[in-house]
Every structure is written in C-alpha cells, then in structure tokens.
Length: 133
Image (cartoon, rainbow, N blue to C red; front, side, top):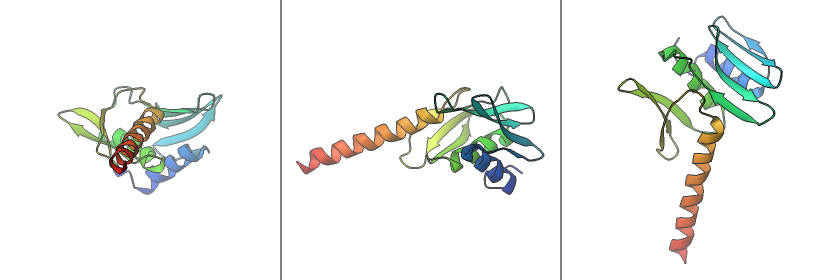
C-alpha cells in the first residue's frame, strides 16, 4: 500500500525513529554497528548514524511511489513536518510548517531539513522583534 499512514509504514517508521528492530514483509529496521538502517526490498533507504546523530535518506535510483511513501512515513514520525512530492519527475521535499521547498537528493539529511526549519523560525522571530521595537 502506498500510504505513509498505513500500518506497515507507520510501524517501520516508528521502529526507525525509536531506534529498535522491526521486520515487515517489505522492510526491515535494524542496528548494524554505529548505524540504524531501514531496508526496503534490499535497498537501504534511510540510516541513522549514532556517532554524528545524523539521519540520511536515499533511493539508490528507486524513485517509486512505494519508496516515496516509506521515506515520508519516516518524516511524519520525525520531529519535522516535511513531505515528499513529485513535480515533472523530480522529487521535492516540502515543509508544511512554512512552505519551504528543497529538492530531494540521495544523501539528504533530516538534520539539514531541521536546520532549515530552525533558520526560518529564527528569521521570523527576529522580524517580529524588529517590528515590536
């Protein structure tokens, strides 16, 4: 099912974000060395590095609705409010909180997305403070 809110998608995403092992028919989440990995049909689509505390995403060329759904389920289970959609064959990540768009690329990190969130929040806060003065 290509729904990021489906039970298998939510369960695997929760396991990945919660850092515990879990297996479903199409996906596996487990720890290997300093990494937590999310394997979808023999392809690692997400991994968390415990040393750098960085979560990264990739497709390995599998730009399918199913891969997009599973990546989005991780984003929905994470801190940010980011989504993935497709425009003219290209994947774009979009923040529901502030409308920011970022092109998806293999290796993009959740930390980058959360940094964008924080930068926009700080800019808005600074503008409010300037108006209040």
